[in-house]
Image (cartoon, rainbow, N blue to C red):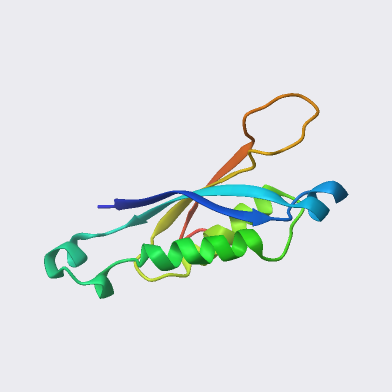
Length: 123
């Protein structure tokens, strides 16, 4: 059985992108993560030691957003997935990276990439 812990709207400024203007100005990125886990042990013991510390996951994701720039949000999503899967109790993760301030030359609300990775899958 797989339960879900979902963290939505993790926001931070990053300097990711292919274009020089994106790397110089930076922009806000928004990340949603869905952690596939088993919450029964934590629910039965009411003890954080038996589940994923989602405050730490959110802090790690924020740090990755504001950290070393990459060209593609696909790459950022992979980095986040690796970080989350390295945590105890997480068996799979869905990561969506939103780039709401993207400049495509036409009006858009958002561009996003969503990936799903499992602990058994090479990430």
